[in-house]
Amino acid sequence: MLHPSCVSAKENTIAIKITKHSKAFTIISSYSSKYANFREILEEQIDLTTNINGEEYLIGGDFNAHSQRWGYREEDSRGKQLQEFIAEKHIFLLNSMIPLRLLNTTVDEAGPT
Image (cartoon, rainbow, N blue to C red; front, side, top):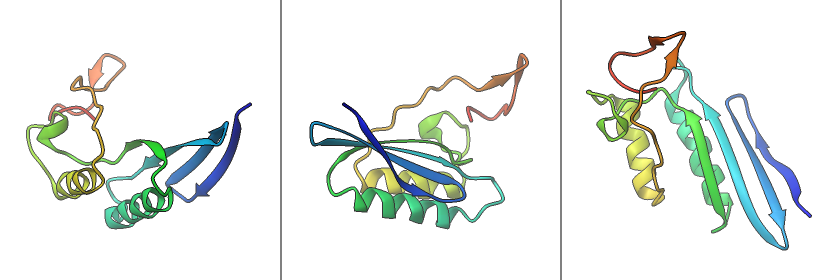
């Protein structure tokens, strides 16, 4: 039987831990508006991944961060900060290089979102 529990719920981030047979897996979902304080969003990620204590986790999010590593032509400071977080935590990046499309219109011509 699965045992889900909410680990953390903040304005832009939620973390749900699912436990089965004493094996835990945490799913973290985040959104960062391009106007939000990105350092605060990253601190939430750092706190959550540190407090998981070696358990497996998956982070999904729209961080409004640009980097060539995930398909943008240019890199911004958010992209650099997010890349540093990914490297420090030894996170495997799983991302599509296909731009997001809404109503048959590319949302951002510079790259995927």
